Amino acid sequence: MDAKVLILLALKLAIAGTVFTYGLQANRDDLFYIVHRPGLLLRSLVGMLVAMPLLVVACVYFLSLPQATAVVLTALAISPIPPLLPKKHKKAGGIAPYGLGLLVVLALVSIITVPVSVAFFDWLFAIPRGLGPATIVKIVMSMIVAPFIAGLVVARLMPVVASRLGMPVRRIATLLLIAGGLVLLLGTWHAIWSTSSVATVAAIVAFIVAGLLIGHWLGGPAHEHASVLALSTASRHPAIALAISAANYPGEQFAPTLALYLILCTVLVIPYVKWQRGRSKRCSNVL
View (cartoon, rainbow, N blue to C red):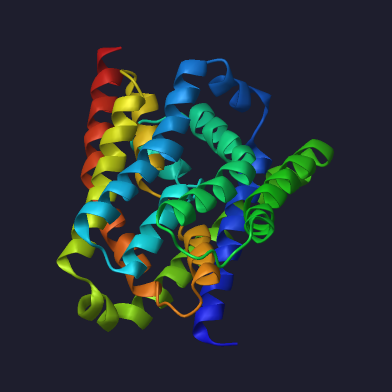
């Protein structure tokens, strides 16, 4: 088993563990929080699953991106799950019911949206499809839907066990994500700088900044909604993106581009989180 397989396995386990904890935490109030706000729900889905893929289409057409960059950005744009964001949502003044409710909806719709999006991009860019719909559905089921349903079942049947499982599973998932990300970064450090063109950096920065702006705007005037949607739109979990990219194009090297995205995303969201945290504190003081 080579390093690439181990990294992918660590990231897959990280997202499965993360989504499992979402299932453990989710309740009817979380789901109905966003369902009872259909305007916010529609804007959230449009921002994450429509606006960002269209942005990638524009980047691919106008920036003459290398194939690895185009594929990674495409995979990120259709990846529905943000990476361990509830804590970052809270720092930015977001509220848990909206964040968890959004994640529940995204986990459920991903079984349809991911295969459809992959087929659309393959058709649009006239790329021979390396993966059939059944394979893509299998990836989504194993990494998102099944862990989420498992979390819901455990929470429903064994609430005491669920309350004890949440924290350790979340910590393990976080460690796996950090470890996988660090190994990915260390293994591709030289390749990042040798293979990343100005167009690649510009496209990734545009993806992240546009995600923050689009999510913030579509989140509406309430900062607790805007911060959650902005961070969720700009930040996507690398596991699904890497799984789809690697399976669709097994001969390509996507790790350097994905590592560059993780670096830039980590850095670029910091000012936004600090700004929203300041806004949240000022609003609390006024109240």
